[in-house]
Length: 284
Image (cartoon, rainbow, N blue to C red; front, side, top):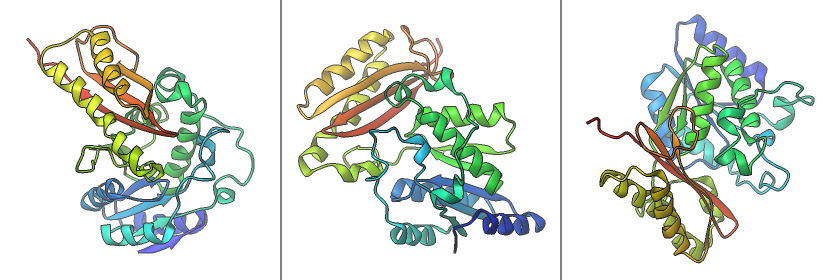
């Protein structure tokens, strides 16, 4: 495995791989890798001749009061995980390499990006789309791998890829969870021991929604109330949103008739955690 920091050098190895007819998989990350990231890398390695893992804490997707400076970073540990998972190349640029001057170009994703996580993080998905588009152009992958935990991000990247005709297949990969159900996230490291125990309310709320849906409940407000009651029972938790949305356009629904995204964003102390599931009612 080889580490690259410059766009020019990763371009050179990508061109060489292309010249030799090799397929390329890309796993975009912000580093501080965990077992969820490892699962993406391992799948990419199974499905491609060469795999690039990008490690870049992207400043354009953080708001002014968000955790850019304190976002956890551990490049040596990340490199070990990438090596063990089978990655060929790691692309870890600094901010000046990716943004040598102020970006005057943006990608508008308002229909999909202004609510759910976008409502409390204005501009977030604009920043995500900008950096992912840049990574697609820099790394020229055949396939790119994203976790389904960030369901809104995944939907937006799929739409951007289609709208802008990127020749990249977007692969969504299942959520990887701790033994108690908490979705793996780099931000889990922010939690104190008491908060870590309290955080289990997030997958519980999603699980309560799932049980109600499997039992036949189709009133979206009823499902929202079930999740809200679960979260309200945990003193350290505060809901940002608990939503039932159409899986295609991410707009809230009142009645569950087709595929829906059950999504939660919950503050545990000062740490914001997200989780979700997709539910498709059986026909008839």
